[in-house]
Amino acid sequence: MAHVFISIGSNVDRDRHFRQGLTTLIQHFPDYVHSDVYESEPVGFNGKNFYNSVFATHTDMSLPDLCVLLKQIERDNGRTPQDKKFSPRTLDLDILFYDDVICDSPAQLPRDEITKNAFVLRPLAEIAPAFIHPVLGCSMAEIWQAYDNQTQKLWKVEFSLP
Image (cartoon, rainbow, N blue to C red; front, side, top):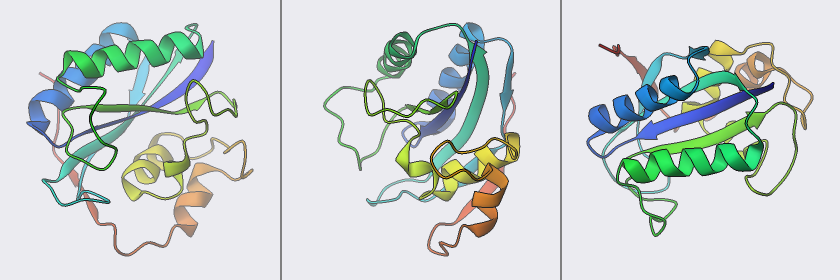
């Protein structure tokens, strides 16, 4: 069983799409850990604020199959393949880690944005502080402690599933 970490983000009808994305992940992976939900400003473009979190689970799905599933969940929530990287989105599901796999295809692992974006790193460090980054050799807690990007603001929001 692979230990998997998935980032969740939405800034288009964010409450609905975030909730639907999380609910669908829970249906597929009922044994999970979920971080707090954070609100953050968009990075790389102007737009509405995002909701972000990290979802962790174990799966026997292969990495390619997991990628296909996450893309399908995004499409089911209105995301299209034509959506640009730095643009508003209904739902964004990215694999951050798949065990200690290092690869560029079918997904970049570990995901590059882990060390660059507070909205990924903070919730990841919250639920997996001892998890070791397979390239950097540091724990998520150590990476978060060393993180120094004052331009990225985020704050915890009240969020619960019904």
